[in-house]
Image 1 (spheres, rainbow, N blue to C red):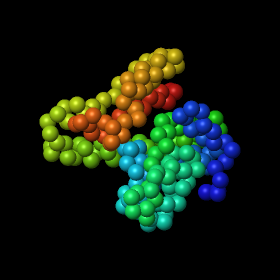
Image 2 (cartoon, helix red, strand yellow):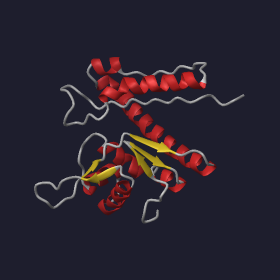
Image 3 (spheres, helix red, strand yellow):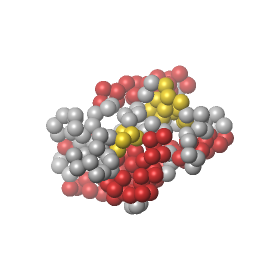
Image 4 (cartoon, rainbow, N blue to C red):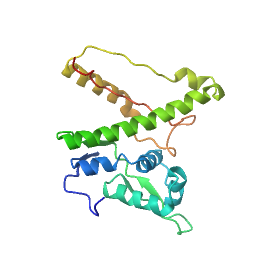
Length: 197
């Protein structure tokens, strides 16, 4: 990985746009995915705490945190009271736009997408395996469904926008500012056309 993020990285509001395939593929690393996921809760974590999540050494996770800082996904948080450890937090980056206009960009984006799907599948599997230990309410509200629809491009765009609009009021909440009784819930949407016959 190069020392500097390449010029193809840009910011537009709360969207990070990555165009260079090497930059895109950098996000697919399992340790970086785990760190991004942990920081997305709103927790501020040190490299040592991230090491416990990733199974890597603190120095290795510090490297990944610094790379995520270059991509404006993580940033240093204020020092803790003892001043000895440097915590990190998310930048509250809400969207990452990956350029798929080249074969290399499409392949890199596929790697990121599949890594994200794998992490989400692991969360679902863990919940399903322990659902019998949950209070009655949580298994009742958990949803696993899919539906195949015949849609035009415009209709597909409308469906995606409607799902995003339904989720928008809840984005940005963290462990410290969510309502009592809240629990971190993964909502995964995957809207893809079937291959052409």
